[in-house]
Length: 190
Image (cartoon, rainbow, N blue to C red; front, side, top):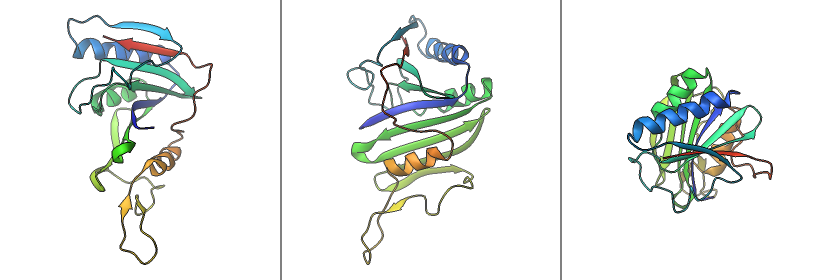
């Protein structure tokens, strides 16, 4: 894995979820037609279609049910989509978890909302914490990051892929599971 940008929603109403994504794209890309179709793969979302920006709105979403009780929607930009996660979690009375990862630079972002309320945001990049917002969950270990130094060396902390996986497992979310051949994708794009 190198780049990963997704919102995970713990819900069962796929049509309402897809409808919210369509509305979001229509609002943020006025004048462009929103297209929705099904596909066997998410396509080049993380390749040629990816927008390497933390400010630009995504132009494509790919929705899949990759574990029971959860929808995952991949999108093609580094924008954390806080408002969309809050809106979807409020509308669907659900838990929403935004996960952004760039493993080549060891940058990870986790944002959590329940029923529209922001609960927690963690962002680690360039060897340090960029953001820690909200109250710590009871399951959080202290420190959150992992000491990479050998015994006797000065501590060197990092919040990496395994830490993000463990953190999300406490929320009931299994990240980065291998795809199955039976997954059907809903592609929404402008």
